[in-house]
Length: 247
Image 1: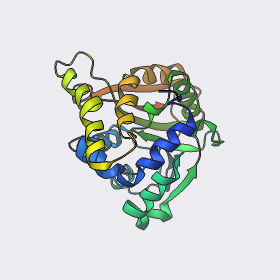
Image 2 (image 1 turned 90 degrees about the horizontal axis):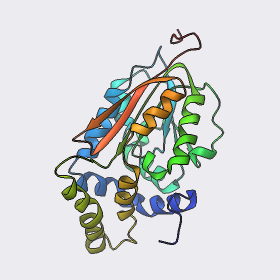
Image 3 (image 1 turned 60 degrees about the vertical axis):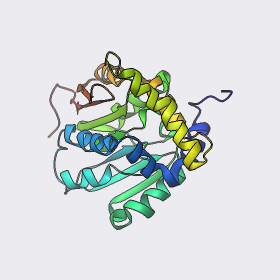
Image 4 (image 1 turned 30 degrees about the vertical axis):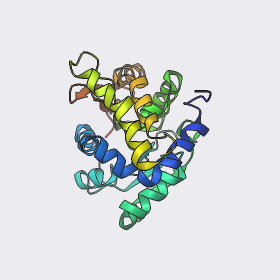
């Protein structure tokens, strides 16, 4: 492949083209696990402090985590969704969340290039967006999260991962690398954009390196595996300057 698959322009093109079919393809081809994992990501997030919490959904995609967030934390003040793909955001607002639009703002931008204010977020969440970054970009992402969270702010992220050590891993990789592209070619007549999801996921590995980076930035986080490591996540809280969360 001649293109840099982690170049923001490449990523935007992939997800703009995927956007109209992304929700159905993701749900069906993951056998419903992506929806379950989004709910588990929200469940793993510590409760933001105070009422009217405001925060960011990074690499927000179609916003499928928003109903889970607003159900668990019904007093949230607002969610600011940041995503590079205008197609994914359009799909989110048209298909899922038009009636919640007064509580959801949107920034169309490369997350790593966004000028988000320091200590502006009570929470940060991200579901299935980390895989579109390479290790150097992960370091930038973690630094961004540590910067925008208020002391006491919370974070939870989840990503499809490579379940190394699981005895059914070969079948899982076959599903990602062979079955999904075949479905796309036969039924969707796509440009193999959905096949990139499998490539990104296996390249990503797991969120354990993200957990380590967050700890290096002073956050207290826990790493979790879901369904034998087919997804991994990290969740925790930013600690204040004297070792206590802010009031």
